[in-house]
Amino acid sequence: MNILSGVKIVEIAGIGPGPFCAMHLADLGAEVITVQRPDGRAGSLGPETCINRGKRAIALDLKSEEGREAVLRLVDGADALIEGMRPGVIERLGLGPQACRARNPRLVFGRMTGWGQSGPLAQMAAHDANYISLSGALWNASPAGQAPVTPFSVVGDIAGGALYLAIGILSGILNARSTGVGCVVDASVVDGSAHSLHLLLAAKARGLISEKRGRSIHDASPFYATYRCADGGYLTAGAIEPQFYRVMLAKLDLANDPDFERQWDRDRWPELKERLQAVFATRTRDEWEKVFEGSDACIAPVLSPEEAARHPHNVARETYFEREGFLQAVPSPRFDDRVCVPGPIPRHGQHTDEILAKLHGDEPESAWKSRV
Image: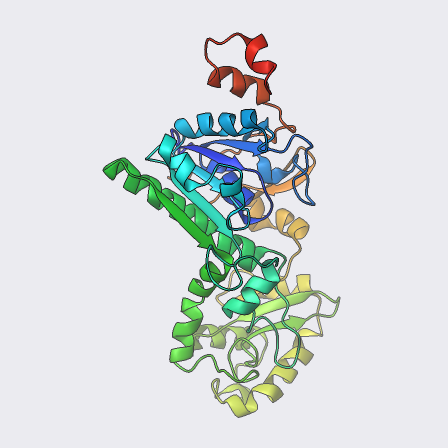
């Protein structure tokens, strides 16, 4: 299913959340042309990666007049452009919002940065962990007394960056189609990861999350925690609601233990957590998974991506697949119970001649090729 069929995106290739956003839109059926550097450099991942699946690739020198003109011609027929340079850089290349929207007033100009287009840190170099540490999103990412750790790029670059940029671009396109006027989308990882804290902020307002570490459900309670098993594997417990808490205790043969009757007695949480750890340490992760299988105990194994690809639930939903040397996940969400089929990974600059030929129309190939 190509739910975004007819949407045209130009991506100025970069690293991190911008390319992921472009891939996500391509996954859902948008036509995405990624403008790559002639030398093939695209950060540490390189240009031929699963982040570029489903895109068409053109190699252009944006410092040359011919390269800039080619991008502007692409912009003429595009719904949106994605760029992830530091504020002001793309303007110096002559491809900023003013230049592009002069060619196409309906264009949605999507800007993806860590700090945003303004503010005292806007020009500073940083990465995912830096952005989410400043936004407040990293604060709760560890047990009390331990250094916060976050999954690489997930919380900031993807959840706080790429997905917010995608929402902004699609919102801008909807507005442009009704008004005829595009807009500039200023998506920053700091803003997005801060906005994504609203469930946590709501829980904090209800007293479930404390400013003091070691007093909240996620970093202190025995029923919302991670436990080590006999084989060194881990399980997560998320039995917050009392009915799920009772199921968890029953499966652990602790239903009649008076020590566990008062679920929300915070003073007893450390002791009860130690007791549960001792219980979980008596069996392997897979053995416990069988114990809890099919129940509402809110227990799940902690899996690596490779293990997750083999889990029966993910196998049944065909969530993962391997192709072109990469383990990949299918596009999400699904529409009418159907999965969008992602396209192949393009070689560096694979579609350059094809795209340029279309841009130059009836002009002889020998003429435009001599200029690029």
